[in-house]
Amino acid sequence: MTPLQAVVVEILRARGFEVAEQDGILLARNGDSRAAFCVLRAAEQRDVDDFLARYADFSGKKVLVTVEPLPPPVLDGLERSVTVWDRQALEQELDRMGASDERSLVDELLATDFPRMLSAEELDSLRDRPVGERIVRPVVTVEDVMDMTRESVSGFRHDLQLMPHYVFGYVCPLYHDQERVGVESGTLSVNGRTQRVEPWPERRELIYSMEEEHQRLEPAVTEQDAAKVARRELVRLYTFDRERVVEEDHVTMTEKRRISPREESIELDGRGLFFLPLWRVEGVHGAMVIDASNGKVVSEDHYSL
Image 1 (cartoon, rainbow, N blue to C red):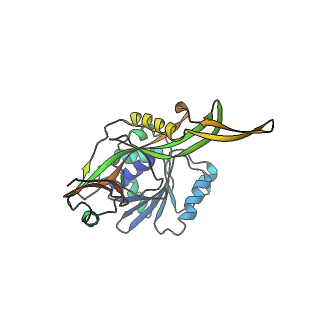
Image 2: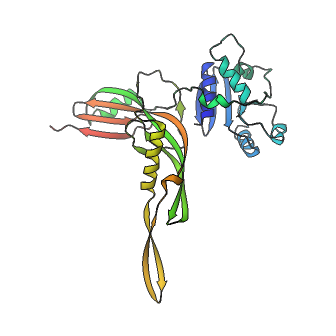
Image 3: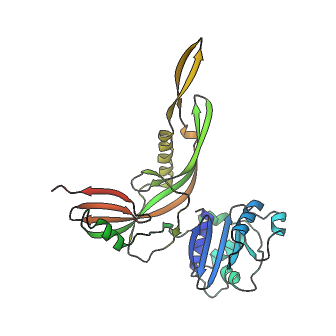
């Protein structure tokens, strides 16, 4: 989730909306009211067209959120059913948060007379606004965990913890000597407590609060420290020897070439702090850690008898 999406989520939650992310689109619900939000740093025609095509049959409101002025061709071609939220509108709404007696951007969106277009001004403070917790949705209940661990460790204590992870998108060029020979890209996470680097799926359903009792763990390292760990791990991960067959004077030789990234050339896109829910189980015969978002066993330790 981008910082801009997180700001929109904060606004909606302040007005009582439940929000989920699906394939990059924010889906909001409050009672019978529904809205789909396409949030873009800069909206281009193809992005708008894709959003409208995907949600052509959506019965709720459709909202385009962009912090850059819309090009005239895009603006002129918008359907009347699409509402646009711009920088100034977002800034004003953030300032109104907590003032329930004021008419809000969300109220206007759900009304029948909502404005089609709002004015465009800079919102430089947008990145500095506080946002809610981004939690990967847990799907494994305490009852599920009790069933899973009954035979293995005879679990008697089941605690739900939120483990902090710094998430980064990366572009990692590969070199042989001074020659660039390829590039790898993807998304990874750095555990904010253990500094373990792991892949991070691009599409994960997120929530922003939990009613179930849990412990939220704070990161032990900064995002800058996590970025250094991520770069070192990418260098290790993508360093390898590639064999090349060379024909020379009727002699066939196999030549090994060392391919590796340069740490200073790796580009990281910091996407902020996310929390992964984990069940920590203590039992008669051992202990287990289970990923509450997918039910996979993270670790298992059996006591010696």
